[in-house]
Amino acid sequence: MTIFSDNRIIENIYDDIGFEDITTNSLVPENKWAQAEILCKEDGVLAGMDVAHYIINEFGLNISSTFFDGDDIRKGDVILEFEGKARDVLMVERSILNYMMHLSGIATVVRKTCEKVKEINPNVRVACTRKTTPGLQKLEKKAVEIGGGDTHRFKLDDCVLIKDNHIQVVGGVIESIELAKENVSFTKKIEIEVENEEDAVRASMFGADIVMLDNMTPDEIESVLNTLKERRLREDVLIEVSGGINPDNIEEYAKLDVDVISSGFITNSAKSLDLSLNIL
Image (cartoon, rainbow, N blue to C red; front, side, top):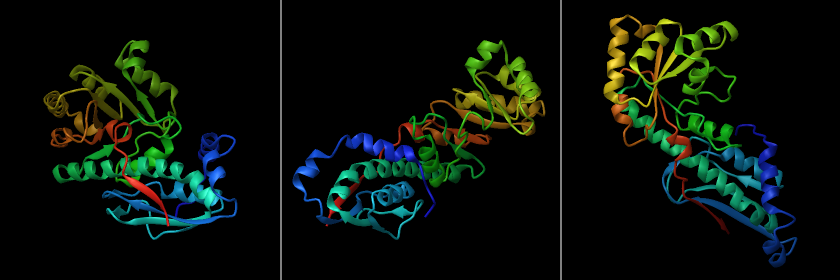
């Protein structure tokens, strides 16, 4: 199990509890002992086990499990069991489930999406974006990694990513790239987002490492790729495509000669995996 620590998670749980869990404390004696299990109610990919261990250990409960993040889980599987004071078990059950269901849902949709893409083009990476839940960025991107996807940037200091609003402020694609090359360390890659073929060519000619073709149709992307090949620029850049891509249409993009397909869907629209907690 990965060593994991994030005090914000515990702070969130105590914030959810408030002064006390009045329901549990009014019904359950302080020294009452309980055993609980988390049951899988649909097939999927497991994520969030490190978070569950962290919470359960924080509240002094005993845990046992033979499952790990990244495991395929099936309906009916008992993912983990834990025991301790019944008040503590009941107090943290919803928080544990919320994290595990959300993160497992992301890992599941990423796994399915990656498998679909790899069948068509094994050289393409499926990546997430920064369309994540505030406060959960690290966990959601970890779930993407567990599902087999690429995490893209974790934070703004990972690499330069010049977007349309940057270009609008600066005044142009070439000017933006030149400023980045002048002011940013050589250790950082420079990526730029473009929305038409002309800007894609400019970006490739003036030193971008990665060109993101944003909100373009497959036909438009194919045209850009052909132009870059004709001008012998294709091998100089990585091509990422993004914008409106989801599991229903991603196959059309996987057929293209691109390097990365990024999608906000896999983090901000993934359905939670159905799990439940039962007191034994």
